[in-house]
Amino acid sequence: MLTRIASAIVSLTLLCGEASAQELTTIRFSLGWKVRGADAPFLYAKEHGLFKAEGLNVILDQGEGSSATVTRVMSGAYDAGLGDINAIIQSAATRPQEAPVMVYNVYSQSPFAIVTKKNGGIKTIKDLEGHTLGGAQGTPTTRLIEVFARRNGLDMNKIKITNMAPNLQEPMLLKGDVDGALVFNITSYFNLVLNRQDPDKDFTWLSFDEYGVDLYSNGVMVSRKLIATNPKAVTGLVRAINKGMTAVAKDQNAGMKLVMENDSLLDAAVEKRRLQYSFERLIMSPEMNEIGIGDVKDQRLAKSIDTIVEGYQLPRTPAPGEIFTREFLPPKSDRMLAYTPN
Image 1: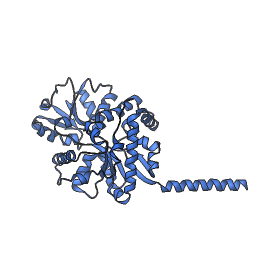
Image 2: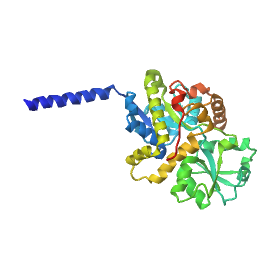
Image 3: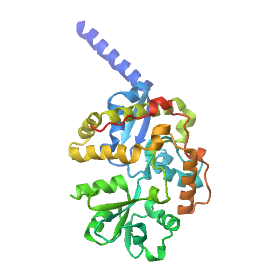
Image 4: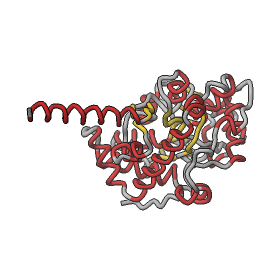
């Protein structure tokens, strides 16, 4: 009898658990790449129950590149993800009803740059003439080099661009096969670190935003379908991510614990440095201090759109409202990050 009662209790408990799980809204979320230190805020939001508190079951998957996130969401395989706003602009120019919408901007500083060896003969952007740059085909840095050149009076006929796979850029730069590389700074910086190089001491970084090509980059995007069918879920997703971002900004060790639990083969010191780099070089900025993380400045976004349309020769110029909405952002007071390296 007691056995039957116990079995009934266990069955009831399991049924209740299943019912609770069914009440959660599942969101498939694509990260930008393999899980690394900079993804700590997202892991924090999941493992500390911030998504669940919003009624969400968020499944975090590693990505295939920040631009590929847009394709993943458009295909319907993912509901949301971390990716490049410039890829949204490209898609919105041709498929406006299918392109995802960014709802929470993360990188307020532009990551696009040219990296050269300090002893390689390129000291200023004018020195790029007469040299060879290695670029990964289709990336914003590579596609926008001609815009960069026009805005800085450079003759592209004197600059040779060699196309190569992204993972070959730093090795070929180190070997001297190219004089510079067209890169995403947080990726290239740590590729050099992992190659036992000192990116600050031995390399020069020419950031696009310092030379007239000022773009936003990675943030949280969601499908138009999710916005239309479950705006409450979008609000909850953004709120939870914002809380994770705020927590890790204050305590990087709490985030790094989760990164290393996810992949114990990573170099903990390098990944913590990557996490802090993401805050110091990409997230924190005078603009972020003014408007809070998650938001953008409409005028800057409009200029960014014009730049992408020019660089990619797009057939249409999307309006800023097609690309980004602040409808789901928490109050500004909740988005004022207090970053403390620790």
